[in-house]
Image 1 (spheres, one colour):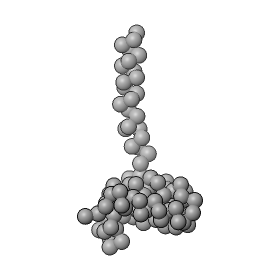
Image 2 (tube, one colour):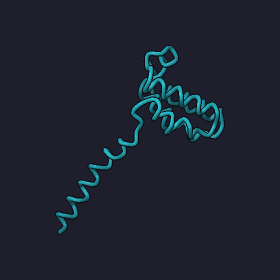
Image 3 (tube, one colour):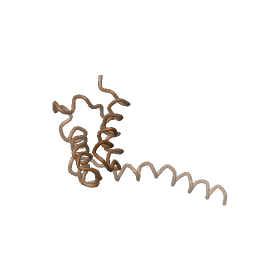
Amino acid sequence: MIRLFSAVILMLLTALPAAAQSFAPKNYPDCAMLYAKKALSQDGGMIMRRACKCRYQDPKASECKDFTQAALDCIISNTGAAERDEQAWGVERACRNKFPAK
């Protein structure tokens, strides 16, 4: 009985990461709908749309050269909660500094 319980728990724990990944955006429209539209500040929405564009649509664009993929993921994950424009720019700067481009 304990082995069965342990096996079920193990199966659930291994399935969780796969389930979480299914909610991640796979293209620019999904990213914009999931994240940019929910931004709490105007500049936060603009930063999120640019991050979505650079991550999913046009990574070679001139406005994307200062961002690594890790920095873009950081921006997408964290900018939406910024209530004021200054906070959104702070998140953008922090992500760029934490994951610098070459």
